[in-house]
Length: 432
Image (tube, rainbow, N blue to C red; front, side):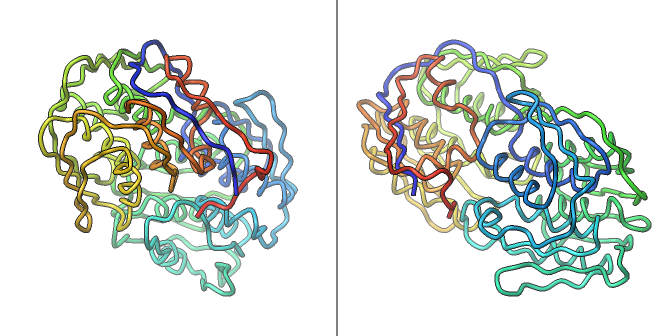
């Protein structure tokens, strides 16, 4: 278990500029997609986060050649990869390891991948993934902690697949599997998140034939092979939103660079409703908060709705809003575990099922808290920045799964935040 912690002396407004890294959720889908490519693919704007490190290590164990060009660029050559059982210890540490199922099933007609780890928000079943694989002519089962999938005819066949729920993971996994399948695959009720569009653009740039990504119907006409190429990952919508919520909570004025403003529309609209000033540039937004925040109701929904991955961060901002706010989680069953930690700081929050009632308070006061998952960990940091006194955030390995250089970036915009490391720290801990 990691002993690293963040020590935050809060109560300081944030001023300056911050540069956003490549999107975590795009990177962890695009890296497994490299398995489908015969040749070298160069991927730029990759974030330096532990989930990416684990993704690349997993490909290496399968025989991929990986060359680091610079801190944000890698070259991946999966030409010599042989089908093999995916390393259990690596795969169980990050959620996106399940994308290897679609990629390996698409390339080899066979996949043996451990059930993934990642943040625990209650049940996140893979039934929609498996429904898609079966429709395309595969047999799929879970045995001894592994998902086993095999194309009955050696190669998957195109199919029409209707997802019973809008699932980002299932949309991506089926898209990966269908890229090299025989014939046309149609995914209906598909998820529309920006990183799904980015994955489709990446594959198309390598020779795939994918249309409709970003809408609720995606059509994939299978091709015989994909060639190498170069691609740059989109900026991280959730990282940008996290800094927006930090300024809303702590106050100040910060310009957030290297973003796609349209991807932030749902976050921007809610912050403006709360009294935050948002000025859009071509590839930046400037966030200003000087006066009091006003109450708001927020419901998380699939894109283009308010993202579930921003729910804990907006909850912190709502703690400072005058009046009573209602936060409704419309995606996961169990995403309020962090509320007990916010209460340690003085937050007034009551949870009933998927609904949190937040009474605005005048101030939060620093205390020791834990990061119980990736985005909840970011929320603890935001709360610490806005609280009076010292906040100690523990279990920060969760945060490092998805935020590149969070402490450095916050320090450069005026935060008083330090990393306290213990000599007993392990390299990468299992993510629960």
